[in-house]
Length: 295
Image 1 (spheres, helix red, strand yellow):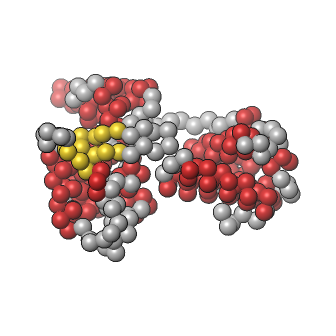
Image 2 (cartoon, rainbow, N blue to C red; image 1 turned 90 degrees about the vertical axis):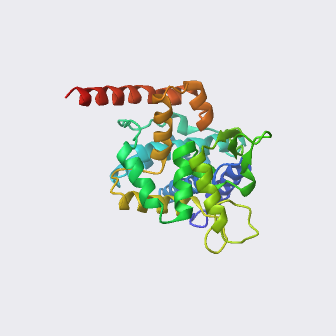
Image 3 (tube, rainbow, N blue to C red; image 1 turned 180 degrees about the horizontal axis):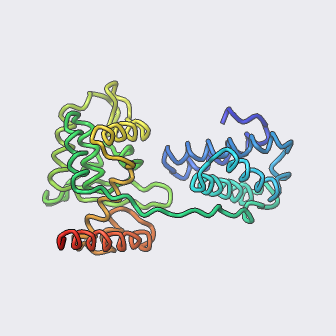
């Protein structure tokens, strides 16, 4: 948080970030919050505010307008408002401010796009271009075949690749993080083989993280994201993001008759309603395929 130019703001922002870390929030989440809060409090400083108790709803509305004036998308602004609200709740709960003006700050209106699902051709193309790199192929297979989050993948250790006591089921043990409890995610033969092939060539290191760099250091979320983005480009898959591999896993299993409750548990959704939003998408895709077959 060294980019904050007000000692009073910096101290409170630092306490907030340390609290996030203590709760086991992922590295990418902590970094996102850090950047958002640094941007927020530096705006307050430029407005001449000396402390967080000086902040009123008028200042927050002006901050939101400043984001709009600087061409931030409604979705990005909404995320920054969520960060702001979480920050102010922390300050109030820890008696670091007397009032929480962020409760009155409204989100901008924006259209929520349906989840992006890879087509069968895109699915195959991504796997094909990834085969040239054993580590990348293993990462892609895990994300496609298990639906875990990219942060969960980056946090896997060698010990998290496990087998049932009877030796019949291979699975990943996903450690608890923040509000997400620990869970077990089965590995099919394709994903398990991809992991085994990678472990054979994995650089020797004392670090227990499953995926590491050539120098034996943990592979960070941003490194994984960059590698997959390049794979999307090589496979000529447009407008796709890493999280779309997770979306594809969910949609594929629902369309193949796996129960909503089972899929929700596999991917670690806290609410069943989060998984339910994919049902309409799966239904639309099925109707589209039927229409194409009748042409």
